[in-house]
Length: 273
Image (cartoon, rainbow, N blue to C red; front, side, top):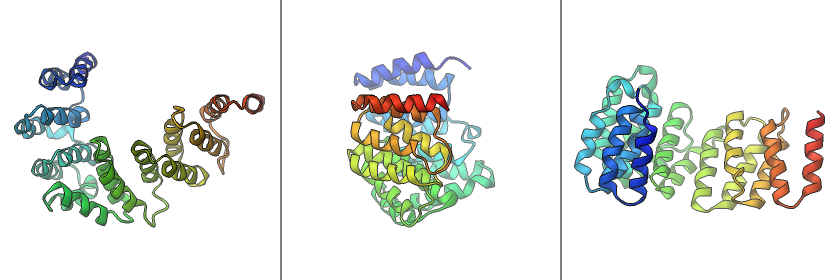
């Protein structure tokens, strides 16, 4: 395969400057050299914003069926199409995926297929908020990925509605709760994100990969007080010792907060173990 990085950088530079039509040929080069499916939501968004919505079905159809491979690759693209108002294209994509994917992947697509049968984007989102309530297993993952696709398109309120529905009466949905915290933080609901993150940090059943997501969310220092609280909660994990990265990031947060003696004491305690 060729190197997709340079064409992608050029495409994104043109996109950020508002020269969308100039960006598209560079996106085509990046698509030819890289992962078609991973870049597709961004390319479709640029295509529509350039006033070329009629080209969207062609771009989706150009992806070989073998590249979809699983529900996790189909749903973000379908969600992007929904949020761009192209429900028919999203429906056609899901129908294609259902024909092409192995049977083990179909449970993850079925909820989205049913939702897309409803028609317009508002109807799909409203139905998702209802039908994703308490969802578990493949259905939960499908709902979460739909919400993630909505959030990536800047549709934060519909994404929150779907995520809130999934986590309702479903305390075991750790990954979805982490996504909910991330989207709430993006929307500016720092207090809401903090509350979810603290609950997850204190939950002995929270998987390590979810703890890593919380670490990434709160290691940037954007919310000094909340970051310190969540990092401290991650250090005090209810089972097992904290990861080295968690300890070091908590030390950095303490230093940023002016708590130098506490930071040095923690570092000394950790290095002595």
